[in-house]
Image 1 (tube, rainbow, N blue to C red):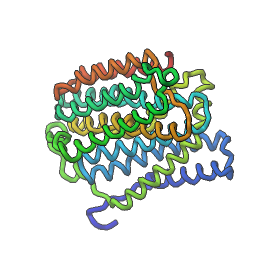
Image 2 (tube, helix red, strand yellow):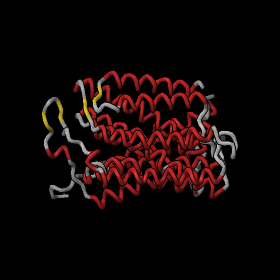
Image 3 (cartoon, rainbow, N blue to C red):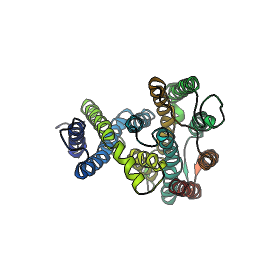
Image 4 (cartoon, rainbow, N blue to C red):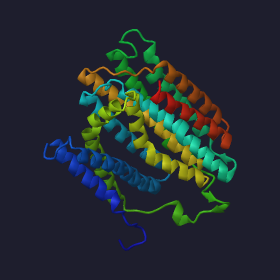
Length: 369
């Protein structure tokens, strides 16, 4: 690439997904020993690399299209990966496959609303003391998020038409449709009707100095990047299918609850986006961090639940969405604290410490219910 509008594509960002996709395809076709320890360890490493590659290419595209479309693109890519892993485990017949969607979605909420936002506020507050963002954006996102979380994860515990903690088929179908429509309305508001609510008006500032323009909007070849993004997503889907049963077996072998599978899935999928959010907070772009965090949480429920619901209804497979009592308490606490933290438009290190404390307790309860 010779002109100034392009950037070099890192070799790892296409070699790892390509290699991962080939190995997964050969193993699934029984041309490689899928049960081999070496193949499993290699596939796990390639899966992590493919996730990072997918999010890297999504970030390049996101920087080109700007906010808030960039945050939406990242959230959708992460959700595609999340859905792929969930569906792979659901269809694998592994123990606890009825609960993996609930555990993953709940873990994603806890990770982004407590772990990621907590770290953003701590590292950003430590460098910039006090940071600000648009209150309208956070209020709109939290209203939709609270509604979707309650309908999908709380309501199943109180309906009587289905099995315990489960919706009846008709309930599941309608709740999934309502969730998808509500998420669609939010995207319309975010990108068309009130796009200015989600724009970063503070500028990127590091130690009181504006960053050079070339650091604010990296350039890249969009068709090439888009193709590599598709390649990375395909590799993730194939590797997730290959590793779905080994992951479940490994968690069971060490004596941990099956809910840890959901934590692992959400953690791996959200790690690259979490890093992007923390980097934005360090550059005093807290609005970008808030867009990424709340966008990921909304996409996780607004897209994952409808897709899983559709698969469940189509295949006649039951899924458990209702939270256990201790997790229900953690969800209510998280939404309550998030409303207070993001309800003023300004944050400090203290709010970050509160969210991180809740995150630590979530990890504790995941391992020791």
